[in-house]
Image 1 (cartoon, rainbow over the protein chains, first blue to last red):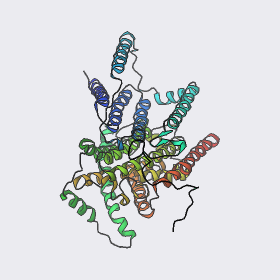
Image 2 (image 1 turned 135 degrees about the vertical axis):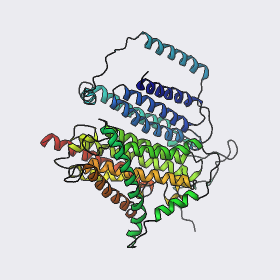
Image 3 (image 1 turned 180 degrees about the horizontal axis):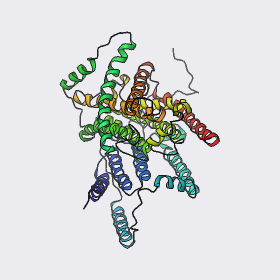
Image 4 (image 1 turned 180 degrees about the vertical axis):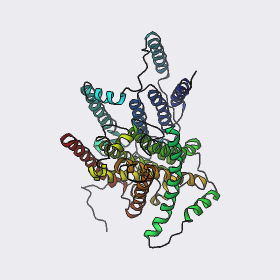
Length: 199
Length: 306
């Protein structure tokens, strides 16, 4: 077993262990960072597979993505700053069945696929070739996926931010009452168009 | 063998750079304030004082992340510097995707700063952490577009090729505004002056409000090291890196890094911090389009005359 094998095993262990801890931790921010750690390990494995651009770009993208995800989760969940402990899993029975099925399916796919055993020639300009592929023959797929993802992100933010903490965002906010169904708490806006001078 | 020499040079660069950064950071503000001979002992005295200061802790912090944040910050500064060539073929981690590695260091730095503020479990560090992420993420976006503009003439993502492509003309001539945008990123990831939204005085120290003693010292060391790294990256991407007559490449890189470092420390003292919301609109509506324009200009130039 060479150094490469050891490194691969260590990185795989980090990826799997931190991936498991994502669901065992009690905070959204910690879960995001554990997921990030898992992705960093996977990114380094991809670098070992002679795909330096994809591997390093995975680390880069995931660092940004997990940071944004932590920020947005904290904004949308009513959990101040993500500091309160919370359960990171839900729909237990469904998730267990889905997890077991996915594991079995992927394991079967790995066992029954014949992987190529041709090591990449170190002098191959892999980054250059990938660039030509991405911005040449695969340009349309690449760009379509990018624009679709952007539209999805904007759409999901708009949809999920409509129902705000104090009512629908487009109907003006109204703080909850001090007792159930009571008058809204805080100072009441005065009648009229709001341009009053107090003396 | 070359990597080993480069690793030794990296250590030398880090030590000299760090000492220089500490001196400039300590002396330049006093010099700008009119003292003709500011004391060079201040940074050392400050470090000694911090080592002896009592340590405090907040209620129920995330001790592991709190401890790891300065370590990660320092490690990222060193990794970022390790992909910079000190001469032709003289680089510690030879990578054909150098600017992507550096980009990852930038992105993970934002994570490290957020971790530091978040794990304290206290209001001021948390506010510092959140608003830093809001400003630093778009600032990092800027820097990546600017770096792509530096990579275009080289037709490569590697720093060595980017330096070699500057033999005819430095990138600062190609995209002068790009250099200024990249300096802003330098201020942002070394938590300095107008881009220091994480631990400035208006938040009573922000992410560092509830730490003391050795932990503050560790954080300051990481910040200064990142200042050295980002200066070296700027010098490499825009000022021709190790290129220069007579002197060895390592010395040229060190001199150019020193110049950028002084400019960054000076800018940190000269320019004031805008309110975060205004800074956010400035970045998204003015600086990002400017970076697109720079990228477009470099592309058009290379298409027509490249």
